[in-house]
Length: 176
Length: 434
Image (cartoon, rainbow over all chains, first blue to last red; front, side):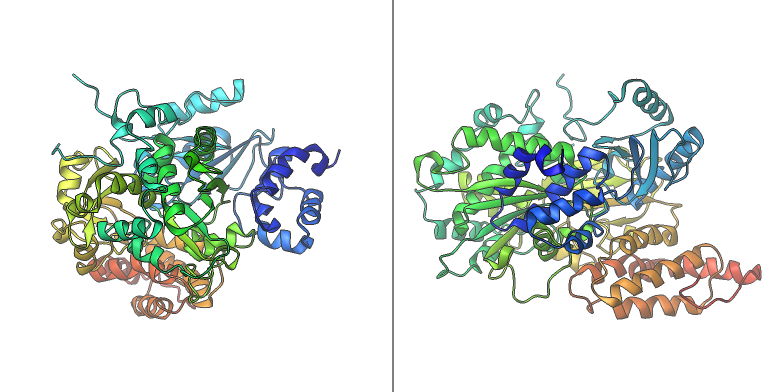
Protein backbone atom coordinates (compact mmCIF):
# COMPACT_ATOMS: atom_id res chain seq x y z
CA UNK A 1 0.00 0.00 0.00
CA UNK A 2 1.35 3.42 -0.80
CA UNK A 3 1.84 6.14 1.79
CA UNK A 4 -1.09 8.18 0.54
CA UNK A 5 -3.44 5.19 0.59
CA UNK A 6 -2.36 4.04 4.03
CA UNK A 7 -2.87 7.47 5.65
CA UNK A 8 -5.70 8.72 3.43
CA UNK A 9 -7.86 10.14 6.25
CA UNK A 10 -5.03 11.69 8.21
CA UNK A 11 -3.67 13.35 5.07
CA UNK A 12 -7.10 14.75 4.24
CA UNK A 13 -7.45 16.09 7.77
CA UNK A 14 -4.03 17.78 7.62
CA UNK A 15 -4.73 19.32 4.22
CA UNK A 16 -8.02 20.75 5.49
CA UNK A 17 -6.25 22.97 8.03
CA UNK A 18 -4.42 25.14 5.52
CA UNK A 19 -5.59 27.39 2.71
CA UNK A 20 -2.29 26.75 0.86
CA UNK A 21 -1.30 23.12 0.30
CA UNK A 22 2.42 23.54 0.84
CA UNK A 23 1.81 24.36 4.53
CA UNK A 24 0.98 20.68 5.00
CA UNK A 25 4.54 19.69 4.06
CA UNK A 26 6.09 19.45 7.53
CA UNK A 27 3.03 17.73 9.07
CA UNK A 28 3.03 15.16 6.24
CA UNK A 29 6.75 14.53 6.61
CA UNK A 30 6.07 13.76 10.28
CA UNK A 31 3.47 11.18 9.24
CA UNK A 32 6.00 9.60 6.89
CA UNK A 33 8.66 9.56 9.59
CA UNK A 34 6.29 7.94 12.08
CA UNK A 35 5.57 5.21 9.53
CA UNK A 36 9.14 4.13 8.82
CA UNK A 37 11.26 5.77 11.52
CA UNK A 38 12.76 7.96 8.82
CA UNK A 39 11.53 9.69 5.70
CA UNK A 40 12.05 7.54 2.63
CA UNK A 41 12.65 8.88 -0.83
CA UNK A 42 9.46 7.35 -2.11
CA UNK A 43 7.48 9.05 0.66
CA UNK A 44 9.06 12.37 -0.26
CA UNK A 45 8.04 11.83 -3.89
CA UNK A 46 4.49 10.97 -2.93
CA UNK A 47 4.26 14.01 -0.66
CA UNK A 48 5.59 16.21 -3.47
CA UNK A 49 2.89 14.84 -5.72
CA UNK A 50 0.18 15.37 -3.08
CA UNK A 51 1.20 18.99 -2.51
CA UNK A 52 1.87 19.71 -6.19
CA UNK A 53 5.50 20.43 -5.47
CA UNK A 54 8.62 19.19 -7.21
CA UNK A 55 10.68 16.59 -5.31
CA UNK A 56 13.55 19.12 -4.91
CA UNK A 57 11.16 21.52 -3.15
CA UNK A 58 10.41 18.81 -0.63
CA UNK A 59 14.08 17.91 -0.30
CA UNK A 60 15.24 21.50 0.18
CA UNK A 61 12.74 21.88 3.00
CA UNK A 62 13.35 18.60 4.78
CA UNK A 63 17.12 19.14 4.85
CA UNK A 64 16.68 22.43 6.71
CA UNK A 65 15.12 20.81 9.76
CA UNK A 66 17.10 18.68 12.20
CA UNK A 67 14.20 16.55 13.39
CA UNK A 68 13.77 14.64 10.15
CA UNK A 69 15.85 11.53 9.67
CA UNK A 70 16.82 10.76 6.10
CA UNK A 71 18.46 7.51 7.17
CA UNK A 72 17.27 4.82 9.59
CA UNK A 73 18.13 5.53 13.24
CA UNK A 74 18.11 3.27 16.29
CA UNK A 75 14.81 2.21 17.80
CA UNK A 76 15.57 4.61 20.66
CA UNK A 77 17.09 7.87 19.51
CA UNK A 78 18.81 9.45 22.52
CA UNK A 79 19.37 13.18 22.19
CA UNK A 80 21.31 14.78 25.02
CA UNK A 81 21.21 18.57 25.33
CA UNK A 82 24.73 20.00 25.28
CA UNK A 83 23.96 23.74 25.34
CA UNK A 84 25.39 26.01 28.04
CA UNK A 85 22.54 25.76 30.56
CA UNK A 86 22.68 21.96 30.66
CA UNK A 87 26.47 21.96 30.41
CA UNK A 88 26.62 24.05 33.61
CA UNK A 89 24.87 21.24 35.48
CA UNK A 90 26.67 18.29 33.95
CA UNK A 91 25.45 17.32 30.48
CA UNK A 92 28.97 16.43 29.33
CA UNK A 93 29.08 13.83 32.10
CA UNK A 94 25.78 12.38 30.91
CA UNK A 95 27.21 11.96 27.43
CA UNK A 96 30.26 10.22 28.91
CA UNK A 97 28.03 7.85 30.90
CA UNK A 98 26.10 6.91 27.77
CA UNK A 99 29.31 6.46 25.80
CA UNK A 100 30.54 3.95 28.37
CA UNK A 101 27.23 2.21 28.98
CA UNK A 102 26.28 1.77 25.34
CA UNK A 103 29.70 1.93 23.70
CA UNK A 104 28.65 4.59 21.21
CA UNK A 105 29.75 8.17 20.64
CA UNK A 106 27.44 10.97 19.46
CA UNK A 107 26.49 10.24 15.87
CA UNK A 108 26.68 6.48 16.30
CA UNK A 109 24.24 3.61 16.83
CA UNK A 110 24.60 0.36 18.73
CA UNK A 111 25.23 -2.73 16.61
CA UNK A 112 21.83 -4.19 17.49
CA UNK A 113 20.14 -1.06 16.11
CA UNK A 114 18.49 -0.37 19.46
CA UNK A 115 20.10 2.93 20.46
CA UNK A 116 21.41 5.98 18.61
CA UNK A 117 23.10 8.88 20.38
CA UNK A 118 23.16 12.52 19.34
CA UNK A 119 24.36 15.58 21.24
CA UNK A 120 21.89 18.32 20.44
CA UNK A 121 21.34 22.01 21.17
CA UNK A 122 18.88 23.41 23.72
CA UNK A 123 15.59 21.53 24.19
CA UNK A 124 13.95 24.15 26.47
CA UNK A 125 14.32 22.29 29.76
CA UNK A 126 17.15 24.41 31.18
CA UNK A 127 15.79 24.44 34.74
CA UNK A 128 15.68 20.66 34.95
CA UNK A 129 19.00 19.78 33.37
CA UNK A 130 20.88 17.71 32.60
CA UNK A 131 18.25 16.29 30.31
CA UNK A 132 17.73 14.25 27.19
CA UNK A 133 14.99 13.39 24.77
CA UNK A 134 14.42 9.81 23.67
CA UNK A 135 12.06 9.59 20.71
CA UNK A 136 9.07 11.70 21.78
CA UNK A 137 9.75 11.86 25.51
CA UNK A 138 11.80 14.13 27.75
CA UNK A 139 13.87 12.79 30.65
CA UNK A 140 15.07 15.46 33.06
CA UNK A 141 17.23 15.94 36.17
CA UNK A 142 19.34 13.00 35.09
CA UNK A 143 21.59 11.11 37.45
CA UNK A 144 23.59 7.99 36.71
CA UNK A 145 21.08 5.80 38.57
CA UNK A 146 18.20 7.34 36.71
CA UNK A 147 19.96 6.83 33.39
CA UNK A 148 20.58 3.16 34.21
CA UNK A 149 16.92 2.66 35.02
CA UNK A 150 15.76 4.43 31.86
CA UNK A 151 18.01 2.33 29.62
CA UNK A 152 17.03 -0.90 31.37
CA UNK A 153 13.31 -0.11 31.14
CA UNK A 154 13.58 0.82 27.48
CA UNK A 155 15.36 -2.45 26.76
CA UNK A 156 12.84 -4.60 28.61
CA UNK A 157 9.51 -2.85 28.03
CA UNK A 158 10.10 -0.39 25.20
CA UNK A 159 9.11 2.55 27.38
CA UNK A 160 10.12 4.14 30.67
CA UNK A 161 8.13 5.38 33.64
CA UNK A 162 10.73 8.08 34.23
CA UNK A 163 9.69 10.20 31.28
CA UNK A 164 8.43 13.72 32.02
CA UNK A 165 4.74 14.47 32.29
CA UNK A 166 3.17 17.93 31.85
CA UNK A 167 5.96 20.26 32.87
CA UNK A 168 6.05 22.38 35.97
CA UNK A 169 9.13 23.25 37.96
CA UNK A 170 9.41 23.99 40.80
CA UNK A 171 6.30 22.10 41.83
CA UNK A 172 3.92 23.93 44.16
CA UNK A 173 4.85 23.67 47.82
CA UNK A 174 2.79 21.12 49.71
CA UNK A 175 0.41 22.65 52.21
CA UNK A 176 1.15 22.17 55.89
CA UNK B 1 9.63 33.75 49.82
CA UNK B 2 8.02 37.19 49.36
CA UNK B 3 4.37 37.10 48.50
CA UNK B 4 2.80 38.77 45.54
CA UNK B 5 -0.10 37.87 43.33
CA UNK B 6 0.47 35.27 40.65
CA UNK B 7 -1.37 35.85 37.40
CA UNK B 8 -0.26 33.31 34.83
CA UNK B 9 0.86 30.53 37.13
CA UNK B 10 -1.96 31.01 39.67
CA UNK B 11 -4.21 28.19 38.46
CA UNK B 12 -1.51 25.61 38.01
CA UNK B 13 -0.16 26.28 41.49
CA UNK B 14 -3.48 25.13 42.98
CA UNK B 15 -3.24 21.56 44.28
CA UNK B 16 -5.08 19.18 41.99
CA UNK B 17 -5.40 21.61 39.07
CA UNK B 18 -5.16 19.55 35.88
CA UNK B 19 -5.52 22.19 33.20
CA UNK B 20 -8.71 20.56 31.89
CA UNK B 21 -11.53 22.69 30.53
CA UNK B 22 -13.71 22.14 33.60
CA UNK B 23 -10.85 23.10 35.95
CA UNK B 24 -10.19 26.20 33.91
CA UNK B 25 -13.88 27.17 33.85
CA UNK B 26 -14.12 26.71 37.62
CA UNK B 27 -11.26 29.17 38.06
CA UNK B 28 -13.22 31.78 36.10
CA UNK B 29 -11.84 30.74 32.73
CA UNK B 30 -13.47 31.86 29.48
CA UNK B 31 -15.42 34.56 31.35
CA UNK B 32 -13.28 37.20 29.67
CA UNK B 33 -14.24 35.73 26.31
CA UNK B 34 -17.95 35.74 27.21
CA UNK B 35 -17.74 39.35 28.35
CA UNK B 36 -15.75 40.53 25.35
CA UNK B 37 -16.99 38.85 22.17
CA UNK B 38 -19.72 40.91 20.62
CA UNK B 39 -19.87 43.18 23.68
CA UNK B 40 -16.70 45.21 23.30
CA UNK B 41 -15.76 46.36 19.79
CA UNK B 42 -12.56 44.75 18.43
CA UNK B 43 -10.89 48.15 18.10
CA UNK B 44 -11.65 48.81 21.76
CA UNK B 45 -10.03 45.51 22.74
CA UNK B 46 -6.88 46.69 20.98
CA UNK B 47 -7.12 50.00 22.86
CA UNK B 48 -7.48 48.18 26.17
CA UNK B 49 -4.41 46.04 25.46
CA UNK B 50 -2.46 49.13 24.42
CA UNK B 51 -3.46 50.91 27.63
CA UNK B 52 -2.38 47.94 29.72
CA UNK B 53 1.18 48.46 28.48
CA UNK B 54 1.54 44.73 27.68
CA UNK B 55 4.76 44.12 25.76
CA UNK B 56 5.77 40.99 23.87
CA UNK B 57 7.18 38.25 26.08
CA UNK B 58 9.08 36.46 23.34
CA UNK B 59 12.20 38.58 23.34
CA UNK B 60 11.85 41.87 21.51
CA UNK B 61 9.36 43.40 23.96
CA UNK B 62 7.29 45.21 21.35
CA UNK B 63 4.01 46.68 22.71
CA UNK B 64 1.29 44.18 21.81
CA UNK B 65 -1.56 46.63 21.28
CA UNK B 66 0.62 48.77 19.01
CA UNK B 67 1.56 45.70 16.96
CA UNK B 68 -2.11 44.87 16.48
CA UNK B 69 -2.78 48.47 15.48
CA UNK B 70 -0.47 48.12 12.46
CA UNK B 71 -2.90 45.82 10.69
CA UNK B 72 -4.57 47.57 7.76
CA UNK B 73 -8.06 48.74 8.71
CA UNK B 74 -9.44 48.76 5.16
CA UNK B 75 -8.37 45.23 4.17
CA UNK B 76 -11.23 42.77 3.98
CA UNK B 77 -9.50 39.51 3.04
CA UNK B 78 -8.29 36.89 5.50
CA UNK B 79 -6.03 37.79 8.42
CA UNK B 80 -4.05 35.41 10.57
CA UNK B 81 -2.85 35.05 14.12
CA UNK B 82 0.23 32.95 14.81
CA UNK B 83 1.07 31.98 18.33
CA UNK B 84 4.83 31.71 18.65
CA UNK B 85 5.35 28.61 20.78
CA UNK B 86 8.71 27.78 19.24
CA UNK B 87 10.42 28.42 22.58
CA UNK B 88 14.03 27.67 21.67
CA UNK B 89 16.06 30.47 23.22
CA UNK B 90 18.58 28.69 25.46
CA UNK B 91 17.68 29.43 29.06
CA UNK B 92 13.95 29.71 28.41
CA UNK B 93 11.37 27.11 29.44
CA UNK B 94 8.30 29.08 30.52
CA UNK B 95 6.05 28.61 27.49
CA UNK B 96 6.39 24.85 27.86
CA UNK B 97 4.90 25.12 31.36
CA UNK B 98 2.17 27.56 30.30
CA UNK B 99 1.13 25.23 27.46
CA UNK B 100 1.33 21.91 29.25
CA UNK B 101 -0.18 22.98 32.58
CA UNK B 102 -2.83 25.54 31.65
CA UNK B 103 -3.49 25.28 27.91
CA UNK B 104 -6.91 26.94 28.03
CA UNK B 105 -5.46 30.14 29.46
CA UNK B 106 -3.45 30.70 26.29
CA UNK B 107 -6.27 29.43 24.06
CA UNK B 108 -8.63 32.03 25.55
CA UNK B 109 -5.94 34.61 24.85
CA UNK B 110 -5.64 33.38 21.27
CA UNK B 111 -9.39 33.71 20.63
CA UNK B 112 -9.41 37.18 22.20
CA UNK B 113 -6.51 38.23 19.98
CA UNK B 114 -8.24 36.76 16.90
CA UNK B 115 -11.33 38.79 17.75
CA UNK B 116 -9.33 41.99 18.22
CA UNK B 117 -7.49 41.70 14.90
CA UNK B 118 -10.30 40.10 12.92
CA UNK B 119 -8.56 36.79 12.28
CA UNK B 120 -10.62 33.65 11.73
CA UNK B 121 -7.66 31.28 11.76
CA UNK B 122 -4.87 30.95 14.27
CA UNK B 123 -1.89 28.63 14.13
CA UNK B 124 0.08 27.66 17.19
CA UNK B 125 3.62 27.09 15.93
CA UNK B 126 5.05 24.84 18.63
CA UNK B 127 8.62 23.62 18.60
CA UNK B 128 8.81 20.14 17.19
CA UNK B 129 10.50 18.54 20.17
CA UNK B 130 7.56 19.36 22.46
CA UNK B 131 5.46 16.40 21.42
CA UNK B 132 3.67 16.21 24.77
CA UNK B 133 2.83 19.92 24.63
CA UNK B 134 1.35 19.61 21.15
CA UNK B 135 -0.81 16.68 22.23
CA UNK B 136 -2.05 18.56 25.30
CA UNK B 137 -2.89 21.59 23.16
CA UNK B 138 -4.70 19.53 20.55
CA UNK B 139 -6.79 17.90 23.23
CA UNK B 140 -7.55 21.28 24.81
CA UNK B 141 -8.55 22.70 21.42
CA UNK B 142 -10.94 19.78 20.89
CA UNK B 143 -12.48 20.37 24.32
CA UNK B 144 -12.82 24.11 23.70
CA UNK B 145 -14.29 23.52 20.24
CA UNK B 146 -16.86 21.10 21.63
CA UNK B 147 -17.90 23.71 24.20
CA UNK B 148 -18.21 26.48 21.64
CA UNK B 149 -15.21 28.56 22.67
CA UNK B 150 -13.32 27.88 19.44
CA UNK B 151 -14.53 27.35 15.89
CA UNK B 152 -17.56 28.65 14.06
CA UNK B 153 -20.08 30.97 15.71
CA UNK B 154 -18.32 31.14 19.05
CA UNK B 155 -20.79 31.26 21.97
CA UNK B 156 -23.51 32.13 19.49
CA UNK B 157 -22.00 35.51 18.65
CA UNK B 158 -21.47 34.76 14.96
CA UNK B 159 -17.76 35.20 15.42
CA UNK B 160 -15.44 32.53 14.00
CA UNK B 161 -11.93 31.68 15.13
CA UNK B 162 -10.41 28.31 14.54
CA UNK B 163 -7.11 27.22 16.04
CA UNK B 164 -4.65 24.59 14.85
CA UNK B 165 -1.40 23.25 16.23
CA UNK B 166 1.49 23.24 13.78
CA UNK B 167 4.68 21.52 14.89
CA UNK B 168 8.07 22.90 13.91
CA UNK B 169 10.88 20.50 13.18
CA UNK B 170 13.97 21.61 15.04
CA UNK B 171 15.24 25.00 13.93
CA UNK B 172 15.95 27.79 16.42
CA UNK B 173 15.55 30.46 13.77
CA UNK B 174 11.85 29.62 13.37
CA UNK B 175 11.24 31.56 16.58
CA UNK B 176 12.04 34.67 14.52
CA UNK B 177 8.63 35.78 13.37
CA UNK B 178 9.21 35.94 9.62
CA UNK B 179 11.15 32.64 9.63
CA UNK B 180 8.22 31.18 11.55
CA UNK B 181 5.89 32.30 8.76
CA UNK B 182 8.13 30.81 6.06
CA UNK B 183 8.25 27.56 7.99
CA UNK B 184 4.48 27.55 8.44
CA UNK B 185 4.19 27.93 4.67
CA UNK B 186 6.14 24.69 4.30
CA UNK B 187 9.48 26.19 3.35
CA UNK B 188 12.96 26.45 4.80
CA UNK B 189 12.80 28.76 7.81
CA UNK B 190 14.73 31.70 6.40
CA UNK B 191 13.84 35.13 7.82
CA UNK B 192 12.30 37.62 5.42
CA UNK B 193 13.64 41.08 4.77
CA UNK B 194 11.55 43.68 6.60
CA UNK B 195 9.72 45.79 5.55
CA UNK B 196 7.15 44.75 4.57
CA UNK B 197 6.22 43.65 8.08
CA UNK B 198 3.94 40.72 8.88
CA UNK B 199 1.22 43.21 9.87
CA UNK B 200 0.64 43.84 6.16
CA UNK B 201 2.40 40.93 4.42
CA UNK B 202 2.55 37.97 6.77
CA UNK B 203 1.32 34.41 6.45
CA UNK B 204 0.41 33.78 2.76
CA UNK B 205 1.14 37.47 2.24
CA UNK B 206 -1.91 38.39 4.32
CA UNK B 207 -2.03 40.68 7.37
CA UNK B 208 -0.71 38.65 10.28
CA UNK B 209 0.10 39.05 13.95
CA UNK B 210 2.68 36.85 15.65
CA UNK B 211 2.49 36.81 19.46
CA UNK B 212 4.32 34.75 22.06
CA UNK B 213 2.54 32.23 24.31
CA UNK B 214 3.08 34.23 27.50
CA UNK B 215 1.89 37.43 25.82
CA UNK B 216 -1.36 35.79 24.76
CA UNK B 217 -1.84 34.12 28.15
CA UNK B 218 -1.99 37.59 29.74
CA UNK B 219 -4.94 38.70 27.61
CA UNK B 220 -7.83 37.03 29.51
CA UNK B 221 -6.60 38.67 32.72
CA UNK B 222 -6.28 42.10 31.13
CA UNK B 223 -9.79 41.83 29.68
CA UNK B 224 -11.24 40.62 33.00
CA UNK B 225 -9.56 43.02 35.34
CA UNK B 226 -8.95 46.02 33.14
CA UNK B 227 -5.92 47.76 31.72
CA UNK B 228 -5.42 50.01 34.76
CA UNK B 229 -5.02 47.01 37.04
CA UNK B 230 -2.39 45.50 34.75
CA UNK B 231 -0.59 48.77 34.12
CA UNK B 232 -0.07 49.23 37.86
CA UNK B 233 1.83 45.94 38.23
CA UNK B 234 5.56 45.69 37.83
CA UNK B 235 7.66 48.60 36.74
CA UNK B 236 5.29 51.11 35.12
CA UNK B 237 4.98 52.94 32.83
CA UNK B 238 7.05 50.95 30.35
CA UNK B 239 7.37 47.47 31.83
CA UNK B 240 3.98 46.45 33.14
CA UNK B 241 2.74 43.13 34.45
CA UNK B 242 4.61 40.10 35.63
CA UNK B 243 7.24 38.00 33.92
CA UNK B 244 7.69 34.29 34.24
CA UNK B 245 11.44 34.20 34.74
CA UNK B 246 13.18 30.93 33.96
CA UNK B 247 16.07 30.54 36.37
CA UNK B 248 18.76 28.02 35.42
CA UNK B 249 22.41 27.35 36.08
CA UNK B 250 24.20 27.05 39.41
CA UNK B 251 21.27 27.81 41.71
CA UNK B 252 19.74 25.59 44.39
CA UNK B 253 16.19 25.70 43.03
CA UNK B 254 16.10 26.40 39.32
CA UNK B 255 12.70 26.76 37.71
CA UNK B 256 9.97 29.16 36.62
CA UNK B 257 9.17 32.04 38.95
CA UNK B 258 6.46 34.55 38.13
CA UNK B 259 7.29 37.90 39.67
CA UNK B 260 6.36 41.52 38.95
CA UNK B 261 8.75 43.15 36.52
CA UNK B 262 11.29 45.31 38.24
CA UNK B 263 12.53 42.72 40.71
CA UNK B 264 16.30 42.50 40.96
CA UNK B 265 18.37 39.49 39.95
CA UNK B 266 19.64 39.30 43.53
CA UNK B 267 16.10 38.88 44.86
CA UNK B 268 15.25 36.37 42.15
CA UNK B 269 18.31 34.23 42.82
CA UNK B 270 18.50 34.41 46.61
CA UNK B 271 14.85 34.73 47.62
CA UNK B 272 13.21 32.56 44.98
CA UNK B 273 15.78 30.22 43.50
CA UNK B 274 17.27 29.36 46.89
CA UNK B 275 20.65 30.96 46.37
CA UNK B 276 23.73 29.43 44.82
CA UNK B 277 24.11 25.66 44.61
CA UNK B 278 27.44 25.42 46.39
CA UNK B 279 27.18 28.77 48.16
CA UNK B 280 29.93 30.19 45.96
CA UNK B 281 29.41 33.79 44.91
CA UNK B 282 27.85 34.63 41.55
CA UNK B 283 30.40 35.22 38.84
CA UNK B 284 28.15 36.01 35.89
CA UNK B 285 24.56 35.84 34.71
CA UNK B 286 22.56 36.17 31.55
CA UNK B 287 19.31 38.10 32.15
CA UNK B 288 17.27 37.20 29.09
CA UNK B 289 18.25 34.07 27.22
CA UNK B 290 21.33 33.20 25.19
CA UNK B 291 20.96 36.27 22.97
CA UNK B 292 21.36 38.64 25.91
CA UNK B 293 24.89 39.82 26.78
CA UNK B 294 26.44 38.48 30.01
CA UNK B 295 26.33 40.69 33.10
CA UNK B 296 28.48 40.71 36.24
CA UNK B 297 27.83 40.72 40.02
CA UNK B 298 27.94 44.52 39.80
CA UNK B 299 24.61 44.24 38.01
CA UNK B 300 22.86 42.10 40.61
CA UNK B 301 20.70 45.01 41.73
CA UNK B 302 19.63 45.94 38.25
CA UNK B 303 15.85 45.84 38.03
CA UNK B 304 14.57 43.15 35.69
CA UNK B 305 12.49 45.30 33.39
CA UNK B 306 13.02 46.28 29.78
CA UNK B 307 14.61 49.69 30.43
CA UNK B 308 16.93 48.91 33.32
CA UNK B 309 18.38 45.75 31.79
CA UNK B 310 18.95 47.57 28.52
CA UNK B 311 20.67 50.43 30.35
CA UNK B 312 22.98 47.89 32.00
CA UNK B 313 24.10 46.76 28.56
CA UNK B 314 22.02 43.64 28.11
CA UNK B 315 18.38 42.83 27.39
CA UNK B 316 15.40 41.37 29.18
CA UNK B 317 14.72 39.20 26.14
CA UNK B 318 12.82 36.02 26.80
CA UNK B 319 13.19 36.06 30.59
CA UNK B 320 15.70 33.22 30.74
CA UNK B 321 18.02 34.00 33.66
CA UNK B 322 21.10 31.78 33.73
CA UNK B 323 23.39 32.11 36.71
CA UNK B 324 27.03 31.00 36.86
CA UNK B 325 29.08 30.56 40.01
CA UNK B 326 32.63 31.64 40.74
CA UNK B 327 35.03 29.25 39.01
CA UNK B 328 33.12 29.00 35.73
CA UNK B 329 35.35 29.64 32.72
CA UNK B 330 33.81 32.49 30.80
CA UNK B 331 35.68 31.59 27.62
CA UNK B 332 34.20 28.11 27.86
CA UNK B 333 30.73 29.52 28.55
CA UNK B 334 30.91 31.93 25.62
CA UNK B 335 32.10 29.12 23.35
CA UNK B 336 29.20 26.88 24.38
CA UNK B 337 26.74 29.56 23.37
CA UNK B 338 28.71 30.34 20.22
CA UNK B 339 28.53 26.67 19.23
CA UNK B 340 24.77 26.91 19.62
CA UNK B 341 24.58 29.92 17.31
CA UNK B 342 26.95 28.33 14.81
CA UNK B 343 24.72 25.25 14.70
CA UNK B 344 21.55 27.31 14.36
CA UNK B 345 22.62 29.94 11.83
CA UNK B 346 20.13 29.47 9.00
CA UNK B 347 22.69 30.31 6.34
CA UNK B 348 20.82 33.07 4.57
CA UNK B 349 23.25 35.93 5.26
CA UNK B 350 26.97 35.40 4.71
CA UNK B 351 28.22 37.49 7.66
CA UNK B 352 26.32 35.22 10.06
CA UNK B 353 26.82 31.94 8.19
CA UNK B 354 30.57 32.35 7.66
CA UNK B 355 31.26 34.55 10.69
CA UNK B 356 29.76 32.10 13.17
CA UNK B 357 32.08 29.36 11.90
CA UNK B 358 35.12 31.63 12.24
CA UNK B 359 34.09 32.69 15.73
CA UNK B 360 33.69 29.09 16.89
CA UNK B 361 37.05 28.07 15.44
CA UNK B 362 38.88 31.02 16.94
CA UNK B 363 37.26 30.45 20.33
CA UNK B 364 38.07 26.75 20.27
CA UNK B 365 41.67 27.57 19.51
CA UNK B 366 41.93 29.98 22.42
CA UNK B 367 40.29 27.52 24.83
CA UNK B 368 42.63 24.76 23.63
CA UNK B 369 45.55 27.02 24.60
CA UNK B 370 46.68 27.47 21.03
CA UNK B 371 45.53 31.06 20.73
CA UNK B 372 47.47 34.17 19.81
CA UNK B 373 47.03 37.66 21.20
CA UNK B 374 45.82 38.98 17.83
CA UNK B 375 42.95 36.48 17.99
CA UNK B 376 41.21 38.86 20.40
CA UNK B 377 41.17 41.59 17.79
CA UNK B 378 40.03 39.05 15.20
CA UNK B 379 37.12 38.09 17.44
CA UNK B 380 36.05 41.69 17.97
CA UNK B 381 36.47 42.48 14.30
CA UNK B 382 34.32 39.50 13.32
CA UNK B 383 31.65 40.49 15.84
CA UNK B 384 31.59 44.03 14.51
CA UNK B 385 31.11 42.76 10.97
CA UNK B 386 28.24 40.41 11.85
CA UNK B 387 26.09 42.55 14.14
CA UNK B 388 23.68 44.76 12.23
CA UNK B 389 24.61 43.24 8.88
CA UNK B 390 22.11 40.45 8.71
CA UNK B 391 18.45 40.22 7.73
CA UNK B 392 17.29 39.30 11.24
CA UNK B 393 18.42 39.93 14.80
CA UNK B 394 20.25 36.60 14.99
CA UNK B 395 23.45 38.36 13.93
CA UNK B 396 23.26 40.74 16.89
CA UNK B 397 22.44 37.87 19.22
CA UNK B 398 25.27 35.57 18.24
CA UNK B 399 27.99 38.10 18.98
CA UNK B 400 26.59 38.94 22.43
CA UNK B 401 28.34 36.14 24.39
CA UNK B 402 31.77 36.87 22.98
CA UNK B 403 31.53 40.66 23.04
CA UNK B 404 30.24 40.73 26.59
CA UNK B 405 32.71 38.19 28.00
CA UNK B 406 35.57 40.00 26.27
CA UNK B 407 34.33 43.21 27.83
CA UNK B 408 33.99 41.92 31.39
CA UNK B 409 36.46 39.03 31.57
CA UNK B 410 39.10 39.87 28.97
CA UNK B 411 41.79 38.74 31.38
CA UNK B 412 40.57 35.13 31.12
CA UNK B 413 41.17 35.18 27.40
CA UNK B 414 44.56 36.81 27.90
CA UNK B 415 45.56 34.23 30.53
CA UNK B 416 44.74 31.33 28.22
CA UNK B 417 46.77 32.91 25.45
CA UNK B 418 49.66 33.70 27.78
CA UNK B 419 49.67 30.09 28.90
CA UNK B 420 49.84 29.04 25.29
CA UNK B 421 52.74 31.36 24.62
CA UNK B 422 54.61 30.40 27.79
CA UNK B 423 54.32 26.74 26.94
CA UNK B 424 55.49 27.56 23.45
CA UNK B 425 52.57 25.61 22.17
CA UNK B 426 51.71 28.02 19.42
CA UNK B 427 51.35 26.43 16.06
CA UNK B 428 50.33 29.42 14.02
CA UNK B 429 47.55 28.48 11.69
CA UNK B 430 45.41 30.73 9.58
CA UNK B 431 42.19 31.69 11.37
CA UNK B 432 39.40 29.57 10.02
CA UNK B 433 41.28 26.32 10.09
CA UNK B 434 42.13 26.29 13.79
